[in-house]
Image 1 (spheres, rainbow, N blue to C red):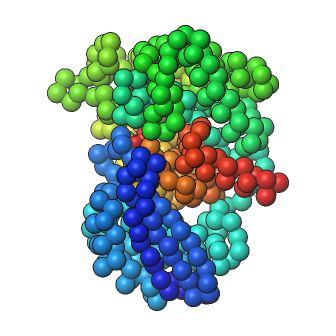
Image 2: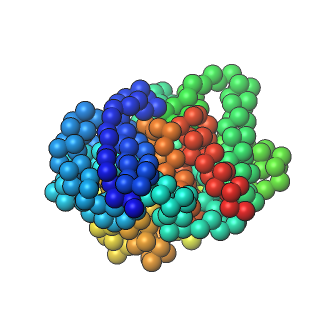
Length: 401
Ligand code: PGA
Ligand code: ZN
């Protein structure tokens, strides 16, 4: 019933105004699914390869579509994704582009779900389990590669860990975002927004820590449940390999000093989440920090692991981090993303399903997070392409309870 009868690929806009790949998958029985590829700015060195949208589309039309149409059932995600790998023939999707691959993979998943008349998360093998929903991490203040003249740390993330429901958690993050706006206005610090909708004021990292602490405390008091916060340092962007040091606007930290600095911030602000505090090749520093504060906070590998089971396995062996960021476009298919989540789960690493800084209205990651029981999802706090996922989570909860 779910035999693929057509795959259409086109160039559409992403949230930064760049071209990205949109895929439509149609099946024999009239099933339909549409997927759109996101795109990173602070991309990891070991990610699957994104090609210019035009090129990715042309190559996928030539190499991948003939292996899918009339050949593979959209309802069998592993078959679809295996066919994409065979069509590509490389280990990083550099032939057809990870952007074409992920758009087709997600579109096929949705077409399979459509035929069943089931939500995508159920088709991917999951159930919505009441209070075990993925807690949204909301990007509230940020800089790095996502905004000029702002913080060095890429993201300060609200974490409404005490929220009783998805809906409460989503609105808590939006309230923290609003509260930070008010604090910045009081301090006469006008701010635009970065690529993910976070405020991008011209403040030091220390000032951003203070503002976040104040905002989450105020909103937690208002709402009556715990809200913590965390970071995505995106430290590979700060790392100077020749000097083996991290270059901030106000100081330079050696790798050892970076471990101390992050550990001290975890203690001082009770951070619940720290992503990419070190360069993407420094498993040792990740292991060192995990040893020190891994029992108090999630230490998450994004550029470190790039949703790749081999890199995750190396991290597990080294004791590096205790959590993995899951971005389907870093690895190219839903199946590869699910495999990374399963390896993580078997080794007690928490999975955090994530958007990219360049996004679309595609809400697949909301379903992936629910399907796999991920404890967190990173998808911004405000802005249409971010709220597309947050509102989908609210709908999943509403339809399930
Ligand atoms: P990117 O940033 O999508 O620009 O890579 C997001 C992140 O680093 O988590
Ligand atoms: Zn990151």
